[in-house]
Image (cartoon, one colour):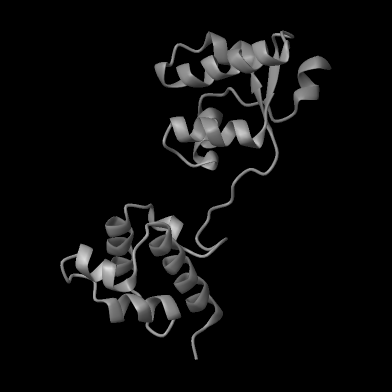
Length: 162
């Protein structure tokens, strides 16, 4: 009897295959026999365990990140749920080219919001995800990068109490 994880993984594999308009036989044909219909079908039913290396190869075949093949919540690193706060003075004073997109995005948000307080800017989770895509990183990876450059504010109230 397949485990719940195996069933969830299989459902994810089936969903990706179907999104691409492929039948099991279509996968075998498109892969020139590299992926047998019976094997892919057994992965999808959860009847057969798939190794990490085979899963990576299957992701490559479907042209999706491996994480897209994993069931919801599996292998997903913790991502910040709320918002982050940027120290605009430090961000705009930075000479690091790698923060140029963050600065440009922050200026665009300020303009959109009509928010020119000049000290801090909160970045919502959706904004953070969009920026992370630009940097080809996870949101938590981008937060780590921003922290390393000292442009994140842990307690925005402290800026105004000094």
